Image (cartoon, rainbow, N blue to C red):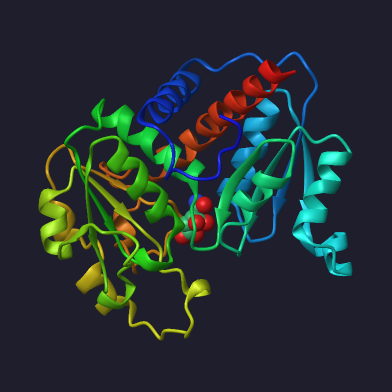
Length: 297
Ligand code: NCD
């Protein structure tokens, strides 16, 4: 693997390898790498979990994170994304982690840089490391993927998390179903839609999404309670889920909108477990990219 920018083209074998490695790292840890490496974390969009867990993953591997704040960088002088990334490559970064509002930015950089690029979320495009940590969480819970019914619920159209997960889960043999407001359906994801009431009864995994207001063309005035009752996970719906079924959400969570606030930490919620797995998932990706660079050298 040279880059990690999409789940669309990943083989089942590579995905499973990363899932198992991340699971192993989450249980046993791994010693830091012997050589000195630098990581460029280029976050052009707000981030708490993804950015911080990349930094923890890098430090646990003994890698020095080169922090970057778009608002105090030469981006303010008009420097392009490419020139910014190329600068980090020139000064010795061994790989780039990039989050940006623009779709495909990571794959464009991957084509033009000589160091590995990791997509930490590109607009409404993809979010492959979030997907990997979701997969690790599912694997730890249910020990398999084939035949699982996974329902992705919410603002499908604007969610890069939905897209990466739909691609990877299909590759792994899961049945992917979607649910959400009609205007947020996405033609690029040809999966069956169900209602939220059907979703809770059939799902082995219910993957909730935040409403991505920042990516909507028009600001939507939302009646939170009626949204929750129609499209969200209410206490009544949670009670109808299968015994073994679990709830995932990439967070940040809008409590009382896509999920009743009291369910965020209920016994079938794995929301904080996902965050914990995020560190190991990112370590597994970085390790795999660095190993491949070492093979080339
Ligand atoms: C997601 C993202 O940024 O796409 N969050 C995350 O990385 N944990 C989902 C979201 O913001 O709703």
